[in-house]
Length: 152
Image (cartoon, rainbow, N blue to C red; front, side, top):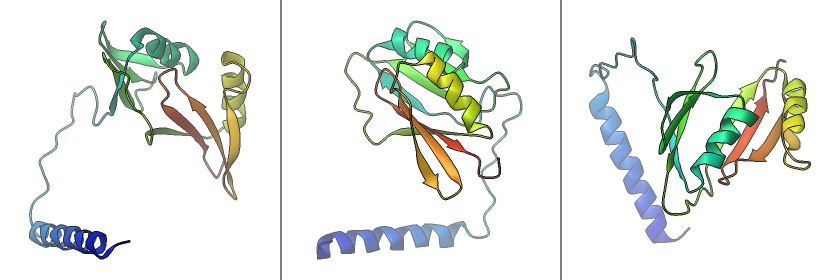
């Protein structure tokens, strides 16, 4: 790392510490999620919207909270989480983005995925000494990881 990069990093650290010092003793923001559709969501652009929506509905078994010809807000049957995709005229670079999930029964989940996807679309690896991770990609190229809950 160059001296310039180290100085910038230290500047960010100092700025962050000052902000934290100012925040000590202040009231938190008054978030009120009662009755909202989601608490937080992540959205990404796709150029082949219909294929991406089909992947999340048919392959992952998601449902939608909102769906029109430009936007899809996905969730699970129990509304445990949300994420969204939006139609984009340009090809989106999703490099570096990873949508991570965790499940208690990764073997069952893996079998179900392999029944729905082409051969070699799902790869398995060790996430740690006590976890397996399944890797796959959506049609838009979004990397998905399904992590095994370690106590499962």
